[in-house]
Length: 232
Length: 227
Image 1: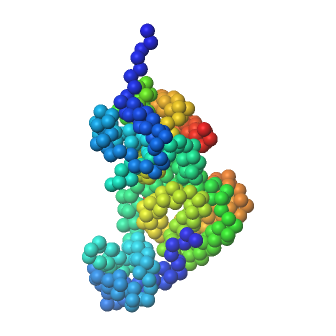
Image 2: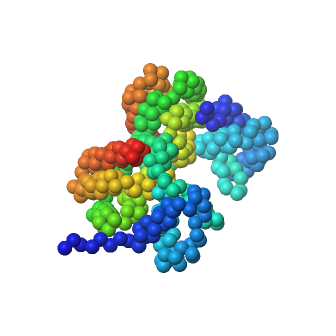
Image 3: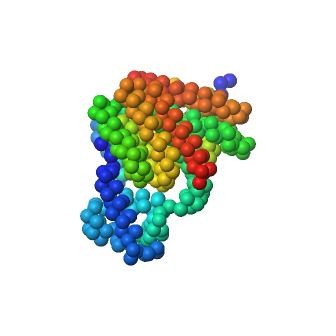
């Protein structure tokens, strides 16, 4: 299965790390313990820890300074003004990868529905279930991971090695965007019904419907992005 | 009077080496004489020998092993077999190109200026000369350049980087596909039609001509498997 991380483990690590950041004896600009130390103290794997740190960084709590360590930048997390700045600053880049996703992903779904096994569809349903839960809990960090898993798994089902490689590169660029876009409640609510429809197309084995739903989903993502700039 | 047709030196070396490989006393797997010896025997420079070896290896006659030399890979190589063996990879590449290239050309036509179009014209003229002078081994690079130019003109840096990813896979295919006369013949008019869409700044026409180009590439690929 394409699921890169155990979502619940990352969530647990996220909560542990967040609790630590919010301890009274921790000040802004304090350095956190090193990765191996934290991994031992919190009893979580380093990969899981790194993923949780990434989300905390996207949410504005910490900053990873290469070669120096991880520092607390805010005890309250994201600052909406800063979030707005981020969306505006990164607009050209975001537009670029949304354009590319609009071109690639409908075709990817079409191929995936033609080529996937029944077991793949059950796995995709399970991945989607994680997202439903994360959305119910308004857990934007977990949702970002579920969203990535959903799209990555569909790419894997397309059985096109080149696509898998390309999407891996795009996902690296998308990580920040996904982490930030789900900090806005409206975007959380849009994701579930969109993924649900795509999943239905898989279950009905209807490639054309799948491509069309993916196209609608991404069109909505573009709109959400435009709205994100306005509501902030 | 019929104009004389000048045969490029490299082609002559290639033909001579193929004759040599086909001689009865040469076995598959046998090592070919070293570069220096070949330069001597054929009275040409090292650059020409290297170029010829590259062509022979693309055509399946020779296998080059770095540090060890060139070996006879097959006395009767079959290009079709290569296309059959790589069918799966080629199909993957084509699927991605079907999604990416129409987007690239639409953005490129929207964004391009006269200077950009001039670059495409220069590339097209280069292709015309290559065809005229029958220096077909240069077609692969010309073709790659054409599509890279369009990706660049799209102004989308992600598209450029994807084009590079694709190119890594595609170069092997490009070198071989132009060994077929049919595929060479289809190449130039397809690129020409695409450049025309740029000149009339017609996005829809650009997408249409690009898709038509890919359809033809697809058909050519199928044919190359069975020729």
